[in-house]
Length: 238
Image 1 (cartoon, rainbow, N blue to C red):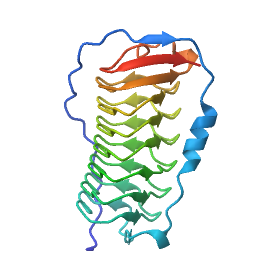
Image 2: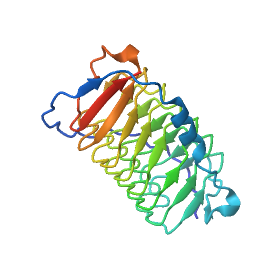
Image 3: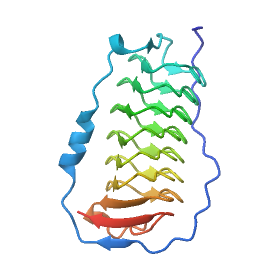
Image 4: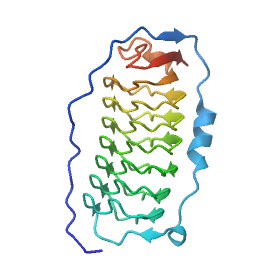
């Protein structure tokens, strides 16, 4: 692999998907916070070691360039601790990729970085991560659950669009914004946990989703509570 000068690519925002007419969502009685279930989910993914990986990314500085490994046949990939940025489309269309190790140094995942990695079954996001770009995991149809780290502030538009086998989404206390169509057509999604820090949910964020949304009782008066965002949502506070 040629050594290139890493260039940090900005995460851009495209035109939002138009929101279909929303019907009123139901808000039910409070439930107990799902802390135990969230913790089990977070600890479930086993770490991928360098010895287990098909490919180890060379020490190329602090960034993986745009499209650097797009369409490569890797099944397992190990990214070293020096990497802070994964560029746009860096692993797009790596259809054989099943598992990848992300370093604790990582702060940003670019747009479409893992789009159409259709066999990606699990990924553990590091606590250092602050931004997930638009369409970053779009069409990762084998991904079953995602536990977003406590450092994350921004979730881009269509970040998990059409992740049809995604069942659970745990959103951290640091998150302030969910982009347009972020979980659009995640038809398998059943449980969504929203934090108190959340300030806005983008248009069509849960389009074609039939799920239960858990949110803190302190957020009951926030304007994002109780809407459907293009899906069929039941809201429960705790």
